[in-house]
Image (cartoon, rainbow, N blue to C red):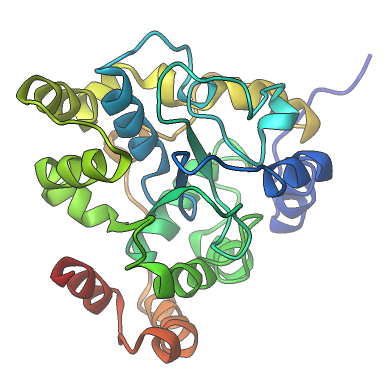
Length: 299
């Protein structure tokens, strides 16, 4: 009898399991995809509102369809589709075709339209940690500081947060790029819905505006959490990574679960800011994330 599958308890084991998350063939298929000019790519660093934007785009193009079992089945993950048995060229439920991706600007296939969402790096780190805890490592076995040092500052399978910011930044004013921040999606959902609808070519009548506000709200997505929890992805990836299958992902529920939010130490805050100064400031001229957000707001 085979030994029961277990979750990692060390960073080294997490990294080893992550190396098996996707195949080279799947990554290559994503890189080699040939977009139509109307194709929409929701291209973000992980934990920057990817699922939220998938739901908003799908809602706008279908007037609120919720008939899917899991969002990735209707807005495919470009670089993981091959492994999931999804044909990226297959017709989707409605136009425009839409895809999720964690590719950087330099990687992502060119010729479509791109929605890039970024987020305060401190919040990305905490969200990433809570997402992995209890899934990719045993709860309580790895500290936030260790996770930050080895997987966030060092770079995950999707690269480094800082590299995504500086890679997308020079393209923020291109006609085919919509550069948004997670915080503005939270603070001004109505305005963000208008901008996304205009960008993807959807007429936002009053009824659709109301549907989009409701269906992309945190309360609605928590109510339908199983449609946004990556269960379809994890059924394929967890066995390959040697992880035991479990019930729910923390994608929707973690930040609203009431469980204690890990606190970032002052030393870790300083390290995050040092990375910003070393990697982001020379490209953008912006001293911190607050300045980046203000720059985006100013247009």
